[in-house]
Length: 266
Image 1 (cartoon, rainbow, N blue to C red):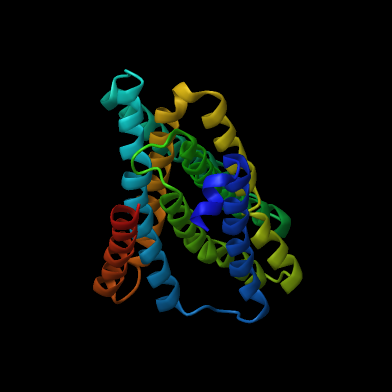
Image 2 (image 1 turned 90 degrees about the vertical axis):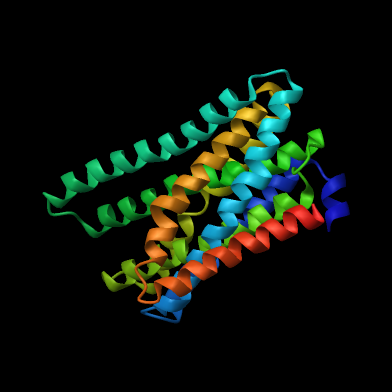
């Protein structure tokens, strides 16, 4: 598998990887056909584990290679990493504020089910864009043979993002089902929220390959976006569980798995 990725065009690799993360969203959305309510312990444990994987991936697969490449390009490494990292988080912060603004306006009106659906989908889709780009950047950076930027690291990053896409797909389809949507319609909107990831993944890989000078910034940007999602969504949601300490352990396990695979096998 790793040899295959070494020989394949990074753009194709990014597309395949983000199609995988999208497929996991589809699987999560498909739970609406079987359940009206998903076991909270299972969902929170998965979110905690995914948070750990994404934190580790943000450093070992994105920030560290960003700093290394900035140094090799004779750039100011700490400034490049800071600007990229902070910009990634700020972009999602602004997106959340825009979403909150429109949601508050809609609450004052008698929103139709379609409007509520579009708001829910747009919120998840907004976060899927930088996640897809993070995978695209990770695979695109393989062309430069950076330490930490390995096929295995890129695969694990895609796996971690895919893992947290599972509850995201469910988080769209199941609530819509409870609001009276048919199972097919709820599933459609649930899977639709993840379709932006393959698009963003290909764009990320293209940017990395065509404009090498911005790779350090983009790697750090993807790391900042991922950390924002972890801190703002995944960890707080997993900590709503009554067994907070156990959920925290799942986060540690996720980080450890990513770290061991990346450092020992990368």
